[in-house]
Amino acid sequence: MSTERASHQGIENRPAELLQRLLQFDTTNPPGNEAECVHFINDLLVEAGMQTTLLRPDPNRPNLITRLKGQARAPALLLYGHVDVVTTAGQEWTYPPFEGRIADGCVWGRGALDMKGGVAMMVSAILRAKARGLVPAGDIVLAILSDEEDGGDQGARFLVQDHAEQFAGIRYAIGEFGGFSWYAFDRKFYGIQIAEKQTCWMKATLRGEGGHGSQALRGGAMGKLGRMLDRLDRRRLPVHITPVARMMIERIAEALPFPRSFGVRQLLNPVLSDHLLRLLGERSRNIEPMLHNTVNVTIVRGGEKVNVIPSELVVELDGRLLPGFRPDDLISEIREVVKEDVEIEVLRYDPAPGEPDMGLFGTLADVLREADPEGVPVPVLLPGATDARFFSRLGIQSYGFLPMNLPGGFDFTRLVHAADERIPIACLDFGTAALYRTLERYGE
Image 1 (cartoon, rainbow, N blue to C red):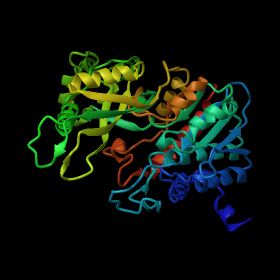
Image 2 (spheres, rainbow, N blue to C red; image 1 turned 60 degrees about the horizontal axis):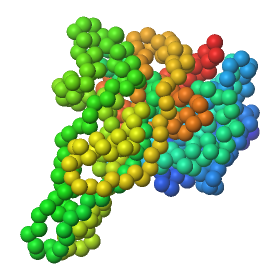
Image 3 (cartoon, rainbow, N blue to C red; image 1 turned 180 degrees about the vertical axis):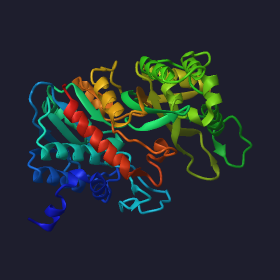
Image 4 (cartoon, rainbow, N blue to C red; image 1 turned 120 degrees about the horizontal axis):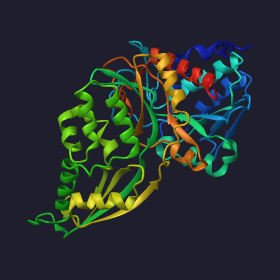
């Protein structure tokens, strides 16, 4: 037995060590270059006696699929996660982002939360099931994906379009982003993601009189841009209460004593929602996008010479649509806020899954209650988008379920894609155990 292979023995019980190794592969997307990382995971699975399949549109962008055979008493269950990560450019890190440093009880590095930490949990759980001889009620399919952070074209979209047979008969899936704990009014909750918003990227063009930089010109494209940015910064788009948001807020309210329960329920009143969000201040940060379509200006292009006033400016907009809404709805809401003569063109629109199938929610909630009786599981709507939108085209309901019992004060959402991204080692152990328990309980 080689030294490297010997070092992998029992890795299913050391998810922090596995995550360290995954973080050491620089899979910043673009360009991704996930091949070395995916092949490392492939080797672990093969060494454990599992059969794997590698499917790729590009040699440097492979996707891995493996299957743990079950008893065929239930449909197969899909676990999926991506190994590409976003850039660290312009960020100041305490430790190098691709070192995988263990410090202060955490594993530090780009992707620790999004989502190599989740991949480490999933791989550890399925290796643990293999090592212990678990034969679940249905097959467990594990998919390790490329390219999620740049649209999924080389990853989940490619698999769904070109290799749908790999997912035949699957009804439920587990992916990112839910499962971690958070506090509201001194009560502990675990959000299980059952739905997500839709990606709608747009290009806005503003035009006006151009000319020499020495002119006292007003009302041009730059002025329009300034007013547009100011209005989008100051004003929310209209409130919309979707079924998932209603379900989440009602379950949170049920867990709180009066009068807090009454106050939380008022978020479901469109007349009061924005007022309450302002009163909540920073605590509303994660709730606000669940009640509104949102748009952010992320790229501005215009002007080529310092002494020439540009007659045309282009900005790119990252729009996120609530379930049930279409790009035209968002464009109308933007126009109502901006009140400028602006052309808006949709660059990319990925529809979200439809009404959620709650069939697996009870099992996942029970697993969390057993793991942490203090926590209250609630369904949540993710303000972002994941690969779930592609698997939904095959009729697969995804749940964001990467369980993490986070310490108080640990701000998960602020660390994702940010400097000093890290995950507590105890959370990796907690999540791996919870996912393994899910495999045991699935189909009961």
